[in-house]
Length: 159
Image (tube, rainbow, N blue to C red; front, side):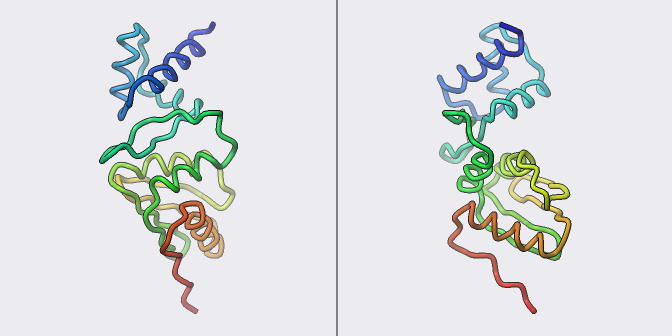
């Protein structure tokens, strides 16, 4: 078994055995298993493995999708877990999340490589998504509202 395959197997085993909330906690759990990994490699491994963050009380924890998620399911799961409100301003879609959850949702959105998305910027609880057009921003906003199953629909575009 190659080093990467073995390391990723250890990551999955750690995540299945105990709740892990941060990459630092995961790195410590791996170190106890004599697996040394830097933060960049750990981030890449988590992304490649399709690991998502799910609510766990007041915090979010890492979770392994079982079985491997089909395309779009990571974004759907993240939107349903973390999306609170969506606003569209010109060509920008603004997504609001609970504190600490915006990076997970932005990563899931980036992973979809949506054709309308030019780029995302994630803060702690807000994501700015720059789209390629105004109609594309409205369409993306409606798509995110539907994925997040939000009760509060996107307001109609003023004429």
